[in-house]
Amino acid sequence: MKKKVLVTGGTGYIGSHTVVELMNAGFTPIIVDNLSNSNISVLEGIKKITGIEPIFENIDCKDYIALDRFFEKYQGIEAIINFAASKAVGESVEKPLLYYRNNLMSLVNLLELMPKHGINNIVFSSSCTVYGQPDVLPVTEQSPIKPATSPYGSTKQMSETIIADTVYAYSNLKAILLRYFNPIGAHPSGEIGELPNGIPNNLLPYVTQTARGLREKLRVFGDDYNTEDGSCIRDFINVVDLAKAHVVAVKRMLENKSEKPVEIFNLGTGRGVSVFELVSAFEKATGVKVPFEVAPRRDGDIEKVWADTSYANEVLGWKAQETLENTLRSAWNWEQKLMSRDGNS
Ligand code: UFG
Image (cartoon, rainbow, N blue to C red):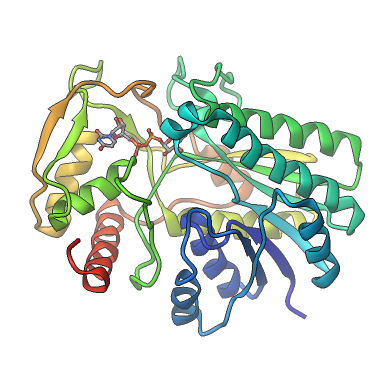
């Protein structure tokens, strides 16, 4: 019997790639999503890649009663991967309560319902945003948690605390918190990828949309940082590599290999790449020019951050594999797919 895993937010960017990897690994993922920031067509893409029709329920995880009914209907779920959350830093500053409501209520509902329905394992999408600007690089899982610079960041820090407190109180529960660095790229098939809503906030979707001609030019936010070329530095990780780490985490819990009830892992490549480097790597990998201009610094940006991945590499037995070049090509391949689907508008 295939093991059932609930994937909340499973039609989103990282969620959809994780659903594919769960299917590839012989699990039965069950997607719960309210499609607030994703598209139902993602299900088609998943099916094209895997040949398997994904199980999908349009449910808002803030709705306790609907979730309770869901668990009644799908008995025997063994683990939850909780992606369902709002994720735009800027929007969270303008609409803090939306973020606290969406991100925290969904999590609290899931945690409350887990013991009731005999589910003991949860994987949570956290972020390197919890480290703020680290004093020492690369950041390890022991690096201090800095005060959050946005309500979005606060929700990630609070969620980690909520999970740790709940696991402490219920001895059967186990959690793995995955702190993502900057996920980029798309499935190599070009069937699923990132679907930014409106004007992209994140760097790579803006780059690919500019390369496509949908945006006039990329604005590089700041070239006067204390880095070699003056632009910010990030740890860009391939989304399929990231997705695979979730499968490893689920297996680890189901095989009772966790060393502690709450484990935390950095998911990155261990390599810092600047914004300018990313743009020129994209041009080199694809042969497409990306017009850009230097713009003022963006509020709240961290100057530089990249991961120490040794703990994830050794304990989880997971390592990011894909090259930056292939990752950038996959993003461009996906953008071209979107272009042929939507036309250039
Ligand atoms: N950038 C530009 N121009 C753009 C967009 C981004 O120069 O049009 C720069 C940013 O200033 C930053 C870098 O590209 O220096 C990366 O920016 P992203 O918005 O792609 O990513 P962030 O590192 O700001 O944010 C990401 C996630 C957040 C998460 C955060 C943790 O999107 O969810 O990492 O640090 F909280």
